Image (cartoon, rainbow, N blue to C red; front, side, top):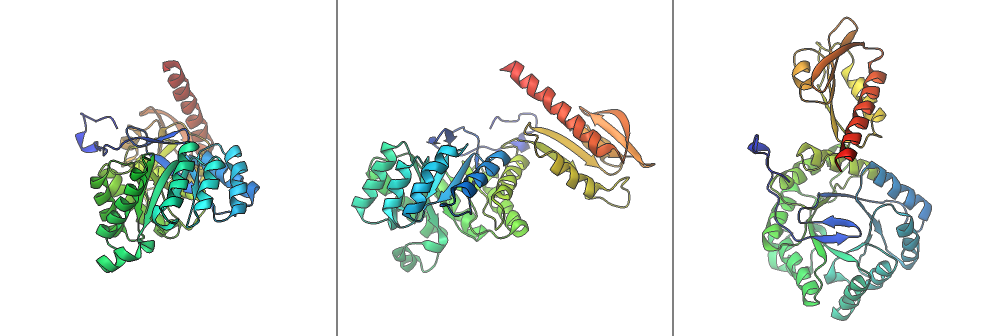
Length: 373
């Protein structure tokens, strides 16, 4: 991320990690932090899985993970990979053959735990398959499935146990001269996750996949993830993220982007700045924002929109946004363009009008970007 010399308090100094490729998506180094999600359909239902992958990609997912629990899923994976608009990560647990099959099927990355897929010979076979098919690997350490010897050593899941587990798995890959890997050390506990990630970030230069696992439902999981991932990202830790929610995968992508947008780490779509509404509001702010969020989902151009109910903070917020609307009472409000008061608009027509103005501004920004390239 470029440094802000005017407002140094906005600077985030990202941890220096080496870069790997997940398909055509760079992860680590100075690459943008990638957003991931995971399908929850049966992998053998190719049509449903592809539809979910496409919906996630449309929402902004850079990478999508798919479970591969059995041979039938391995066979389906080949068609899913072929139809996917983004790189596919194959989620592998226990059976080393699934890892080999997934690499052969075209998976861009294998999510494995090298310690639970068999003896050294089997691990070598999976690594060979990954190397032969230009497939990277994610080492996935989870507090809920730590190795028995580490639990006996430490007595319970703790940051030290998770870091030690991760480093043991890294050694397995490095001993086999395989370096195209990233690592995660997830837990459902925010404190445990944060401490483990800080530990692994200091111990290796591998790219880091961030996540708070089993975070919960849409609201509770979003809050937990925002706290855990947001603090780590603010510290400069993290090269790719997945927000784990008991919700539609598209919601995971949306939340992931919002976390990154709030820190200035990724920019995509319309960033709506809106007030919580109060008795001063000149129009129904809550319903207006709900409608605009839906109507503007198709905009991918990074831009800002302020929707403020009254003139107390409205003009000030509008100064810093591409498009703005401030309630003024008497059934109308002021439309701001590029931070300047432009014209009045009636409340009953303003949603359609704001959508038009945002679309117009997005087209202008896109044209300027194309001209500069």
